[in-house]
Length: 139
Image (cartoon, rainbow, N blue to C red; front, top):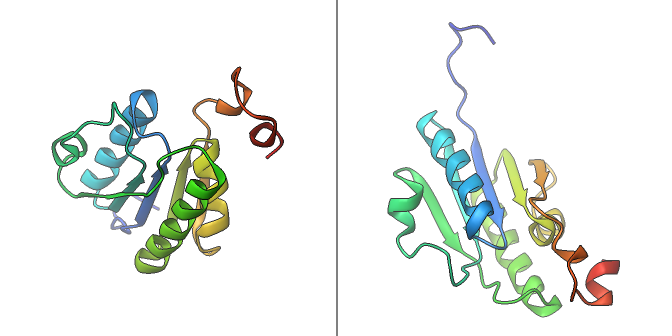
């Protein structure tokens, strides 16, 4: 692509299971930049206690956000989130899916359409923390 070529807008979906702290800052920065560059950006996220209340202000104009039914790091909750992520994938048909965290990586890789390019960025391996169950570590 040369500097004379027009920007080809992409549909980008960010999936964040824990939308707070460092993951929030990474997703916020990426999505704002991508939206300002002319891309269609959606953030699918699980609300946590420290997720900002006003996401319109936090993410900026042009960034759609969709709350996922992901209340806990448990199989049933992850399955519900996967169903919601699949519906988002069908509706938006993203060009790029950026999965933030090991749980988002698992759910998104199962649920999102294969034609979307997938970027997986684990911001920390939560399963290696003390207190993670044996099933979570094996998965």
